[in-house]
Length: 143
Image 1 (cartoon, helix red, strand yellow):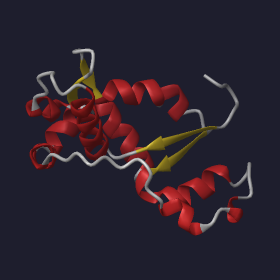
Image 2: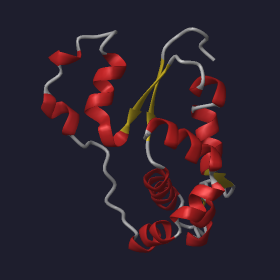
Image 3: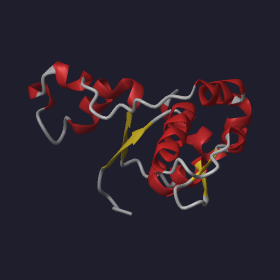
């Protein structure tokens, strides 16, 4: 870890991240048996055929020691502009960035799965229960 250094990391709410990751993997490896029921436990099939788990990704990118370090600045996807300004204002003149630049979407997938969205929506308590670390980190930054 970068001891004593400021770390800036993006963060999304679990249901949005899980849906996005699932759709990414479905598009990346359409011949694999992607099952919606895996989503109920925060899991999805990786392109390698291995099962991915949301909490593993959260632990990898935002480990507990980093979260507790006091040097972490989080940019929440839903509050991107304000969080970006807070995270970077001590490093760059963020006021020089035109407001319109914060609302350009450059990497939007065209694939969609209403069934996957519904699976996630209808099982939210179970998904958060299955991903306790993600739930903890999310609660901390989405107070």
